[in-house]
Length: 139
Image (tube, one colour):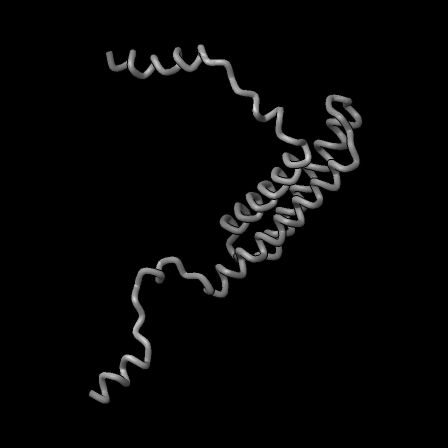
């Protein structure tokens, strides 16, 4: 009975027709967001795995990986040379734009982490100011 309850949702979902929203999204949006996520993901992955925590090197590796996969891999090899997709010069620009946004996002993220401007673990703790201490001294 337990296994029937686990398998039953798979049969019910198999009857539904898939909603093909991925094909209705504009390809420019896919290129930009894909480059942003690829840049940020690879840069953060390298930063977490590196021992010296060099943020500039992590951002450089993230942006070069995003450009290599997006421009060279997808546009030039897959679309232009293999003719499996539609080659468009603006898609290369969208990949570059997404990579630039990803570099800006990761630079801001690393700056906030390094300088300690935002410390999420200290948000809930109330802080006493010097004004409160002077008030108690005068009373």
